[in-house]
Image 1 (cartoon, rainbow, N blue to C red):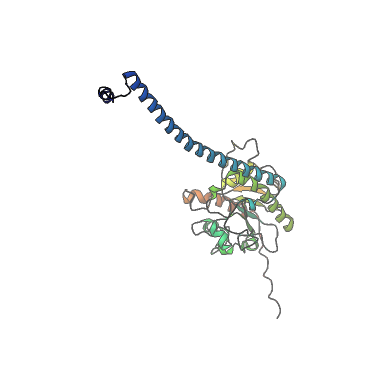
Image 2: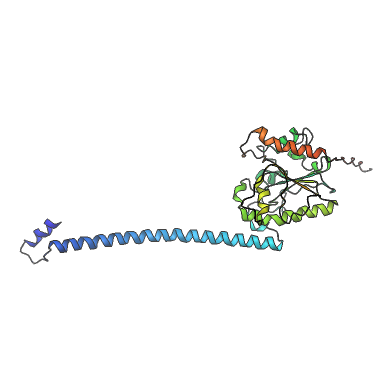
Length: 295
């Protein structure tokens, strides 16, 4: 470039004379302009990404705040979780199974939330990959041959009821329900268990959680929440506000029966064997069959 500029200055025609200093200054200004333009474009892109992140964070904070407010007021949380599936009041969905008529149960199993298959079929743990029914059969908690379609019979024949922490909120991927959502579900669970106990005349003898997560999140407002360690089996710790005391109801944590939970069959079945031993100490009388109506 320097040689070209010198050539033009020697043509004899009127032209601007460029010395070495002017050329260097020109190149510097051009480079500065170029990098300024590039930086401005990059800043616009980064700013856009930053604003999207801020908007998402604001949305998460507002959702968590709304859930916490509804938790304190004791309001239902189903409407806060949008789903393509209608609420269970408007379609089949998956209802709690406490028996009809209700009477004091030996055991209530509390799941995380209904899977898409359970919500569609109207039966607990009906996903073909879920091992719940085979686990219950193997340890003799339910009779041989019982499947998900028999969950309506379990309260009367076995004294076993079914519900979920996230009752009315279907979804196979439980990880999409973040901790604040589970925290807001707690009050509803307590109210539903208490309502069942009032209708039945007494609380269930055992409430067993079919996974650690739904039990651990009940301690979210406890000082020991971050350090608490949940083991499988009978529980000595009791979350604040649980509707039944230790003399009325034992708390138990089972391994997850989901096919996605990686563990050996022996490790998965061990807590169920322990639960079966506890249930043997609680007798259950099968109610007599009602006589057919007279024609």
